[in-house]
Amino acid sequence: MTFAEHRDWTSCEAMAFARHVVGDYRPPETRSRLIGGYVRALLAGGAALEAFVAARAAALRTRAGKPRAAAVRAEAMAAVLRSDPLCASRLAGGGAVVRGAFGGLDWELSVDSLDVGSGFFADVVSSRALDHWAWSPAHRARVPFWELHGYWTRLALTSHLLRQRTGMELEPLLVVVSDEPVPGKLVLSFANPARLACELAVVRALSPRVAAVKAGKLPPAYCGVCDYCKQRRPLERVHPASSHPVAAA
Ligand SMILES: [Zn+2]
Image (spheres, rainbow, N blue to C red):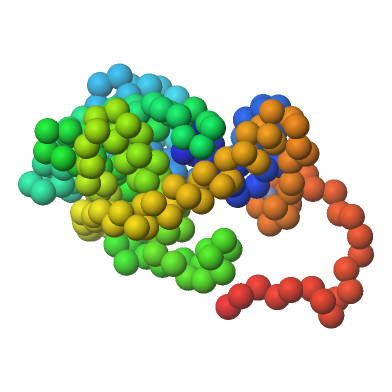
């Protein structure tokens, strides 16, 4: 189970089942996902970069070979992280894949920089702005981008699997770069044992249902609000207009 797959299963089971079990659904790649992935690939370099560019050649370059605007932006964002001494030092550990069991599931989590000797691991994140907050349907509130995208959960799982492997408590970090004409940078620490333990408890509680739905033992539920549900969920009844919920402002 990768973290992206876990996010799918815990946001919309019907979409996750179609995507990861049946294999007949693939969400479109958004501009922000393309840029975030390219920044991480540029920083990783080598085979990871070659594979990323080969798979998205048309999205990154014109037919004449000129870089598209998204590619130019991502290259500027990666350069900002490389040129800052603090960011560069936290990214010098090199990428790793951390495997292990938790909550009855087998996990495979990628880490952008793992430095056991210095006592930390770091993931790279691109954000619309360094102070970007957005509406979260799950929280029913406006939250910072790291809450919106589940980074506490991701870092808690990685931290737990690394503790199993190394016996050490490594500091979880996010190296953030903003997707702006002049990209900003930030390094955030998530060294909060109580919050990380809480995230693990939530994953542990959700895992039996995820495993059962994935194995076809329980029918997958529609979330009712995602793009997959908009496209494929059949309507079940007529709703009274007076009880239809209105969007939060
Ligand atoms: Zn859905």
